[in-house]
Length: 273
Image (spheres, helix red, strand yellow):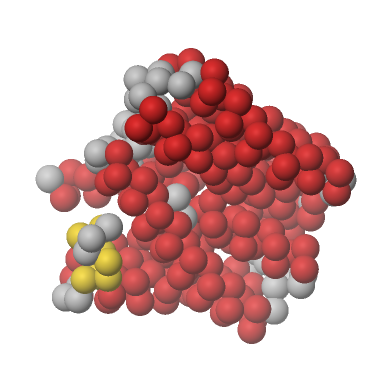
């Protein structure tokens, strides 16, 4: 079963990675954003399918809310008034949506919080990738997107192999029984290696010292993002967020770390780079 799952993962990567790179480097920035917006919508539907399993109308409303946040951030991310409006408006809209679709009162608070959290979690997290491509521009912008993706997926892959062959000590058994401390260290080393390779190859604007720090911080916080999604799945009784990607589960299962690393890399570019 493990070998079959690994083969499915590799097959998905072999098809997906070249397509992603082609879209990232050969298409205009808005073309890449179309892919991101699609990911926001699918991920949003998966998330709200967990928190609103019996209410399809609310799931669609949640997806719309995610997309509104994403569009506003992409089109007017530098406009303080728009950002303040989003931060103040999302909680209010979340409350109105639950009052409109009350359902079981025992889960109303969970659903109310899910609307506000989900819209920002996906709308901001994934759209940060599109902002890197648009705001930085050119090969450097695309390079920072590749770095964010590499930190997330490199940490995940390094953690998988290190945990499988060296793992002995549980990292957070109550949330993710298979994750180990050794796997976490392996994930950090893999992310640092990817970041260092990036600074010497396709992302020469990134200083070596910064690359190492980004690798460590991105890997550790990305792993927390992975654990956070595991909490969401276990608390709602779901094994995988979906079945869209063979061997990987749903979109959320693949971007749980990426929504964090993309924000980290974008904030680095805006504040330090």
